Length: 342
Image (cartoon, rainbow, N blue to C red):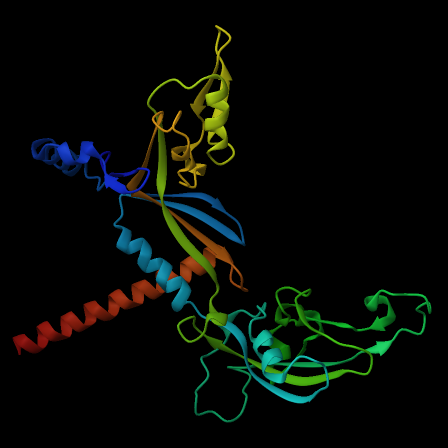
């Protein structure tokens, strides 16, 4: 596993020479040793986890598996988003279709796991598959504003239409199941429109359950991965060159330490934070002092939530969807085997 690296050169990415020159005999010996110990050489480490962000290391797993989780997060983990807007009155300068599109992109606090997917042929909005909102707001002149006031936000009341203006209207037995605070937009300061005195917006909006492959508004958040960066100093870098080298990398990657002889020398502090910008190759004096590599068997996966689901809940849903796909495949194989035997 140690030789699974790619080298970040100035104009290209190549395989590590150690990997190319590695002997087959040594590789077989490592595989045999792994078999004897009963370990597959794989591990998962959670580096950071909170409701919004999650950072997790997959060591020894094929990149196709991590990419499958990424694709499922973006395309198949369900959330709730506004799908239909009934516009009763809109005298603002923003067009009806633009306002409806902006409403659809507003993330909601609604937990999708309590709802069903709506049937496309359904004509009525039910409590089991829909969430209703109403927005009714009018911009008026502020009677308390000074005649010398020039700030439009002070002169006018309700000039900015924010996502907090969306009010939940319960359907059926929803008040018995949900609390009002859990049915509001995720952020209450999203700007939807701006109005002048006399303008009015009155509409009804319905949110449904959907997945990212249908529309990006249903995506629960972001998910991406990268290989673990490694930085090796091939020679001692000191003085002004050390300071220049430090500026070529992200903060915290390269530190400058004082040696007993008074020299200021660069050393690698935390290569994990490197973004692999390769800025160091722009300087002829120092570009020969580093070797940039990435471990292809050490993948860092990031999940960032933009929805009601927490970051770890999003990954949990993705894993369950993957399990369901595997179960479907195994069932199909078993049925085929049974059919062939009969």
